[in-house]
Length: 451
Length: 82
Image (cartoon, rainbow over all chains, first blue to last red; front, side):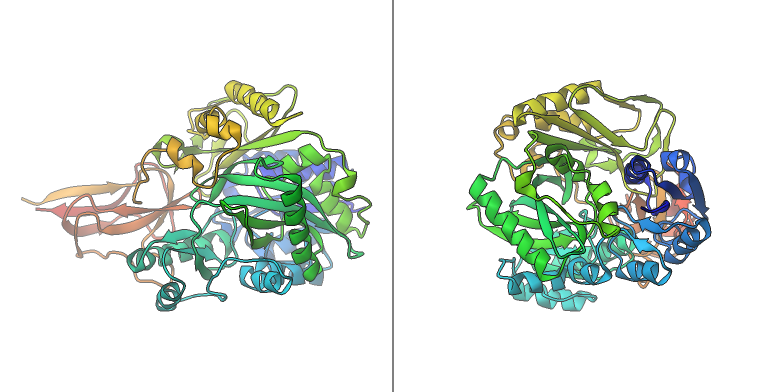
């Protein structure tokens, strides 16, 4: 077992990882920027290294400083969380060169899976269907315009190093592409430290289904079922659930096997997610592999009973997977609501500030992963995710009812949050029936602001 | 008679004068700008907002420093309009 792990992240995921380490009896080192000194991770970790500055590039993306912190604190491993350095091949290599275990996939997995373009190539070779696209990275606007005309508008711009919707834009024509391309580049650069973009055909309102996978050092790769992530706005997930109301046992089995084919074709190690789009005719297309722990991993944990962060640590120590999906008794239905510091009534405008009133929910079937507390100041420099509220019940209706009860108890003020929007979604007849796609949330929002 | 118009940050964030580090700034002092022209970017919680000009006018002063944090309602730049 590791004696000490450095958690190279912030916010709720840093808290999540520190807790898993503590459960395993492993000491933790938190890192933080100067703007995050008042956060929860610095308080609950055994040790703290504060990095100068507030910008992600100087702090949570600063490989040299993070590796130095790990060496100086005697950390044997680094858990990168999600975002920041989680999918950075150079960082994973840097860890191993420093004799530090990177808790996550192998650098080669990150290279193949983390590079969305190469991953699609592998999926095609493995016989899994994909959506048509540029097939390579695009760095200039001129190049982008040529490719987009080739594929045919509307097209989607995506960050090659991306995830979480950052740097993603739908372009209906050349004019929109001209305006959005540089901004998407800037967003990608800021969020991931790599501004490379790619382009693919835009599919109108598909469902977003993803499969959680785990791979051990002995070449065994298993999946833990699907997550339904269609409730999104601006390509950012808002609410996730497992299982998906869109899949029957046959489709679940076929998507699960497709995910395993892709993962095995690149000898996938550790935790990852294989993303698919599902169209109205239940055709599925491979989108990408997310070679990291996902924000929404708790819904899978709730319905499988597998602690995914604990498994990541265990797998990194070379321990084997001694179970698979079919050997895990189903534990009902789970839903996660992302509570963001954003105003759903005003186009999700970020809402930083001090949390003057904080009353968290609890009770049967509820899990709350968060780094906030009464008096916490939400800094304007980082992600808007404040908390993940997870409900679990024997069936979908119970999970919805438990979530509605918990949302009703949840107070975060005066910062604006997505809580009121979640209440509307969970009370909607179509949502309750399971009849929704990635265009579903629009009806709850004011008309899209052009900016 | 020229009127001074203060362009303020609608929320706290980081101020950017250019679309990306390689690109030239959106505007410089003495530039003539049109209503709705993009003047700068504000990054708050990883979301970039284009700050647009509320009016036709001339840039007379750029107060905020590129890539510096700015507070809610901080004056970013000043326009002069007829």
